Image 1 (cartoon, rainbow, N blue to C red):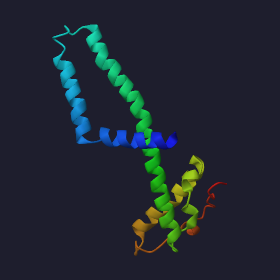
Image 2: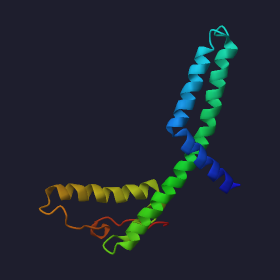
Image 3: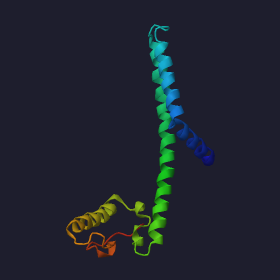
Image 4: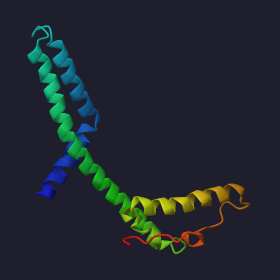
Amino acid sequence: MQDRFGRLANSVTNAAGSSVGFTAAFALVILWAASGPLFGFSTPWQLIINTTTTIITFLMVFVIQHAQNRDTLAIQLKLNELIASNSAANNRLVDIEDLSVDELAVVKKFYVRLAARNQTAADVRAPHSLDESQTQLPRPGS
């Protein structure tokens, strides 16, 4: 079931995000607006566009969220691979997305201090790591 939804979500997001998808939506709105005089700009005529756009928006929220979740996971895995494969990188950043907001704030403070230090450093390309931090950093999953 989830695999079928994934394939459907991918197809829908690809179609909706294409120029053909935009052109089709734009053409439907123009067609609806042009039919206004034919239906006397009545309340049912207005309800058609309101109901249609509401339903499409409601369904697209779930489809887009699914696509975004998949893309975010893929990016996180790629970054984890880059971190894990670089011997100079601190492996504590692998799976950092699992930390709490408070724990992420601690890590961010280190990078803010690092950025400030690099602005005054003679060699901004000198490597630095989380191990230099004066703050005890949280470990993912702790």
